[in-house]
Length: 368
Image (cartoon, rainbow, N blue to C red; front, side, top):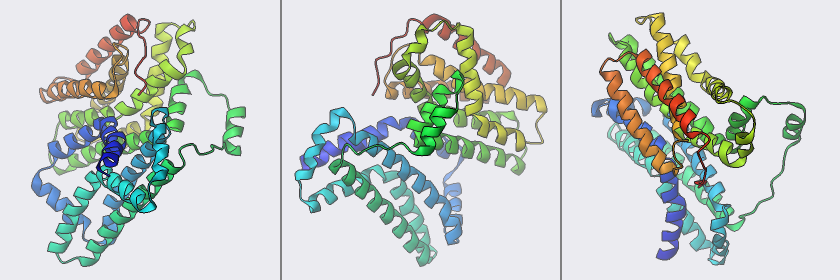
């Protein structure tokens, strides 16, 4: 039994946290960097005041559970995991135990915060909130266990294409700059949606702080750094499509300038939710020129991260470590009151240099 749990933990738990390490670092940096312990307690106490407010963390747990469900479904169908078909030889009771423990390990962040909220609800004698927290987390655990067990018992389900999708593929012609964006949204929808929700929420929280005190543009720069760096996992999948699934584009007679223009245009469309929030909720204490420079700086972050992927073929965990290093540099530069326009120019200059030097030399190998 221990050996089976070790195997499932290595395949589903360790790989899950490794693949999503960038998202966890972004969330940890925002939570630990902008909120103190009293702020966490005050926020938790506000959540347990009513079932309606408790829906906020429950929805976040639900989104997190969907990310796990998507990862487990794709992982169980990988060729290197075909040996898991022998999972069917275990008794149903053992199958449920294995999947329940594995799902619990994947759900640790939600369980820890749920425990924190449960402790606050008991201290304030909100027992109905306590019961709702337990029911929500127990339901998520059961869903994760059932889905993992189903995919382990049915590793090759039949895939059907809906009539709507067939009609769209046949009648709507997409321009080249939308190829990567469409592929990521179709094949990694949860990562795509999760990155957008995380970035939008971080930027919204940053803009919401401005009316509480007299802040300069540095606070906005910090929020933009975290919000736009949260797109790293989507950029990695974007890069994978261009260099593995659609590598034919590298042999097409397209100039570097056009390639960079298409990439920036795709990123502008990809970052429309954050851009709309930035300009609609822009702080009145800042100048309009600050908003233009801030948006340029924010857009230069994914541009530099994407161009960095061409420097050398690296696995996602190594890319995350380098991205974390870049994030520290950007944060230090912003806190040092360096103009966002200057940081933007540096990012764009470095990106152009990497594109020109490494694009045609790059060889993609790391597909896992």
